[in-house]
Length: 149
Image (tube, helix red, strand yellow):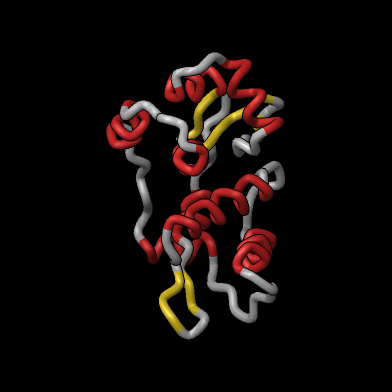
């Protein structure tokens, strides 16, 4: 779920200038989409928790009311493919390498996708063993377009 700076400020109980200051000075993750700042709800929640900043329960309630449709795994595999011999020194490098291999539209924000995958992986590993992982978030993002403002 993508949030505007205004929405993030509301969930955090601060004004927009505070959110912008936290982005520039305290590392609050934000992404530029169509020249506008957006925040990912999961990243916002994780960052606020790490910083000891209260977040409105409404954020979780809103996310539950607007669940994202996820295609069947078979559809996701066809759309995203199966990638083997993916190189990389660590989890972040491997995820970024996967993103470079995905069949995405030319205007897709691959950096944003890699960031979302890293955030998802931080919540819990998608690895299933023997060097195999199924990061379904990646395929979902390449099959559906992100909301635009």
